[in-house]
Image 1 (cartoon, helix red, strand yellow):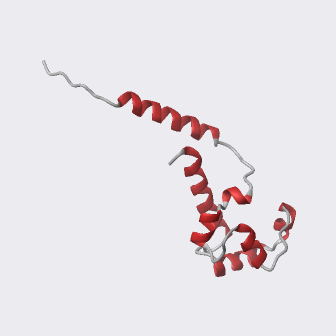
Image 2 (tube, helix red, strand yellow):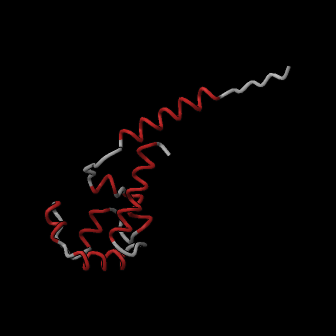
Image 3 (cartoon, one colour):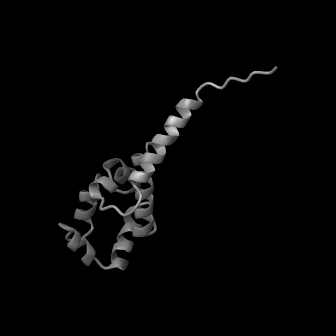
Length: 108
């Protein structure tokens, strides 16, 4: 009779369970601070700036609060993003940052 022994399957299942729990924890909507969504390494890799605060400071807009940010005209902000980052617009930058945030949160 042929006997097949598999080692490591239990550990794989534990890791899969952990991953599922982490995914469940980030499901839904989240209020993520800009500093967490756009960590310094993301900004340095994808923009001409050192951090998100530096980017806001050089944007020509006053950004001291979420309300200030919401007042920036979309087209002008997209133009700033296209000129100073690797992204075509703000949505593309947000999508990239969100993807990296998710990977970090689930441990990938």
